[in-house]
Image (cartoon, rainbow, N blue to C red):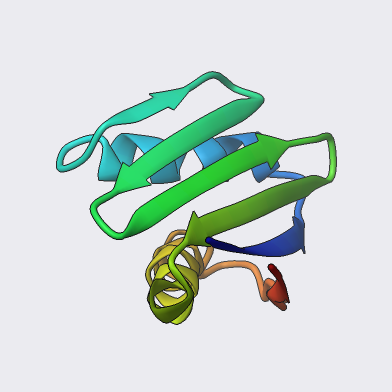
Amino acid sequence: METSTATILSSRASGYLQQLCKHFGHKVPVTFTAEVGEIALPFGTCSLRAQDTSLVLSVTGETDAIARLEQVIGDHLARFAFRENLSMTWQRSA
């Protein structure tokens, strides 16, 4: 299993966490509060943690699924946050 993490600076971190979880909750198992969430995709999981000014995303899956997890979660967040110019850089670890 491999993990990749991205920290996004935004004052709307909790709102984005909840929006992502509600969106994916229509299709896959999801649990969330205003501060933490988890999305269980068929090819891996995404853990989310909202703080006052940042949202930490952590995806975990098989090595061949990490790029897809980064793209799916990243693309959805970018669509939800289109009014902000969010910077998202993923850092992988084994």
